Image (cartoon, rainbow, N blue to C red; front, side):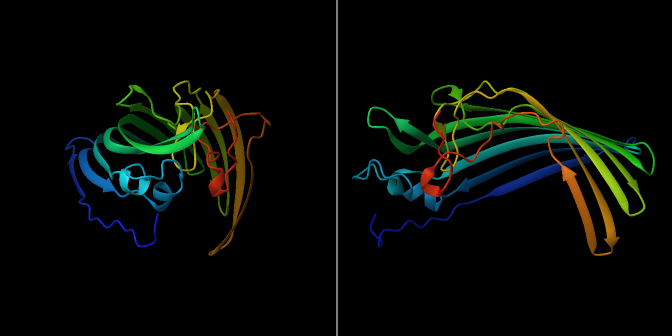
Length: 252
């Protein structure tokens, strides 16, 4: 790519949200819709060196991502209970997908595909009294390459969180239990400019805890231990895809 080559584009974006507050309950429900477009970033345009010839250079070939999303949800605030739920569907035209190690020359390249992502989240918090509070959440996502009807890479697995917090005066403490399901829907050696799917990941549970002291109005000291039970586990989402950007580039 010569230094004199440029791309300059202006993209539209719009978002609208309709909310409704129930008359008999402290319940708010909403539905939202949005449209946005994303210009390929610097690394997506210049990182991959394969196919540097007319019509194949990513600088010219990659199209902008175009996203349309609809989401809906509800939020209930009924002391001492606070609960919420949401669901979303996202359609991405010309999603920028990286493929690593394409045979036979073991090259890598980025292409535009059509993708769909949908999922949901829910949470429930309960305050027992002035000192004790329970917080919980659950999140799930599903991604599909609409061109091949295969999974999208780097989609997080089902994850639940349960936290118990205590507060008294200037002191506070929290115990957190993360429960993450296995992820079997993977796209091997596909991802984005910095990450890719290496293999399926196993589920795990991790227990952590921390304590904090409010020493002054502007000073708070805290200490904690992650993975109290010293469990061996691996996160499905990673930063080990592209050696050119300084990441681990682990082989599958």
